[in-house]
Amino acid sequence: MQKIRLNGSLRCIKRSVSMGAVLSGSILIYFLLVSQLCRNGCTDYTLTALLLPGHLAVIAGFALIVWRVVRYNPDLMFSPAIGFMVCCAVFFGFGNLSTILSDDSTQYFMALGLYHPGEAGQLRADVLTFFGATVLLTALNFGFSLRYGEFPKGRAASALPARVISLTFVLGGLALKYGVLIPARWGYVQWVVPGMLSNLAQVPDLGFFLMAFMAARGDRTMRWMFPFLWVPYLGLCLLEFSKTTVMFAVLMPALGTFLGKRSFKSLAIWLVFAGVLFSATQNVNLSSRKAVYSYSGIEDQAPLEQRVRIFFQSISEAGHDQATLVDLMSLPDQLWWVRLNYAGPQIRAMELYDAGMGTDWLVSPLAYLIPRVLWPDKPELVSPGQIFNRTVSRNDDTIGRVAITIFGEGYWLMGWAGVALISACTGLILGVLTRQSYFYMESKNFIYLPLVLVAYKMAVMDVLGFFQTNILGSLSIYIGFRVTVATLLFMLKGAR
Image 1 (tube, rainbow, N blue to C red):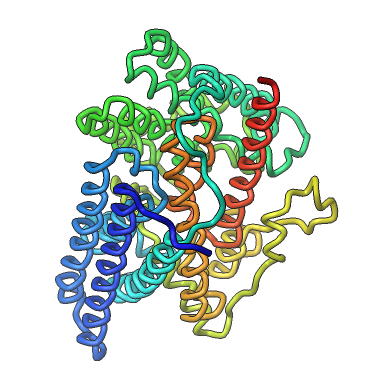
Image 2 (cartoon, rainbow, N blue to C red):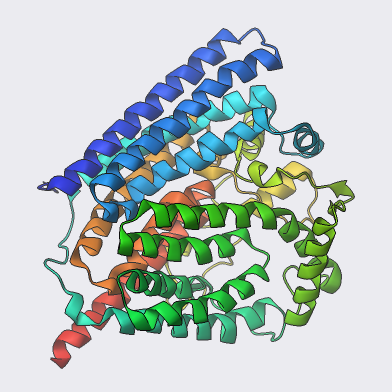
């Protein structure tokens, strides 16, 4: 391995990652000092007063680093390194505040469930999270500093026009999603969709990103084509009753518009819309998913017309201030905030390991990297989130899946050594992908866009799940996309 020669943008990334590691380490020390101070017990009020400045420092510190990087070069917003710091600010800073600052009805609702951390549990989860984050950012910086392979040089935008790429992603992605994936998921057909195809569900969002980018840059065709295709697409996404699906559908055009206009005002408008939509649909999604299960007895299987009825019924109940009921419990208005908090599941994972009920790798890690078409006898992949939820709830029939973050997974596997190992491996992967993503964005060849956004998703969202399914699963998608892009570019080069 050789040291990479850094230009201004690469130096900005490396400096920002170093600052993030120092910030995370400082936050870790602060929470360790609070733990030591309260080792003989502290009142909930005292713990709240001590936790608050720590979480505010997380939000302000990481937000400031991200702001500084994006002001220097907006393209760096799509760096996985910056994406992870966005994750820290949103989930491990703002999200964790729900434990101590949410209203009484939300606190009561949380206390009735299995995953309420409480103030003491929140503190322990913070120590876990920022120990893992410090190791991850340190390993990321190391991986980013090493040269591996060659990268596209110059502007290869002539390989395929951006308009062709965007329409291919949108129209091809919509055909795949609503011609293959959704019919199987909603129960119209009985075929089994291969996992590699299921992982392409967000391809239309990549196309809408490009459409929004070109519309922001003045493309008149895309200015009318984008809303014509995107508005009905967003409506169908709402009927999936999935916050992840809806957020991807909104945030991809938001980022495309920002990259095209370089306007923080336009980005702020999109983010406000995304935030309102996220909070407004949280309870609707929960009650709607329960209604779908009651309708068919199978998770996620209900036809379009039934989903429309369920959706508007949930909205109608919320509009008339009627309590939305799930399992006979009223859902509080701030449940959306709780959904950003992963401290409760992290604490349950730590308690399981401490009680001698740790877990093992469910299958070989290669099973997540090698597609079934190349390994026909590959063992069936299971959901660690479902196994975890069944273990905690002691209910082998529950279908719910609970994410515990890669830090919680590491502890559940091997205690603190597992946290360090999983965090370091994730950091090295994100370090390599950060460097590659920069060169892909610098090339201005949008055929590389899927690679950039898969890597970004790993840093922002997959770290909240499991290393063995989310991180390795996304890495296999990344490798598949890379092989496909390389093959396509080779064919185009040979056709000239």
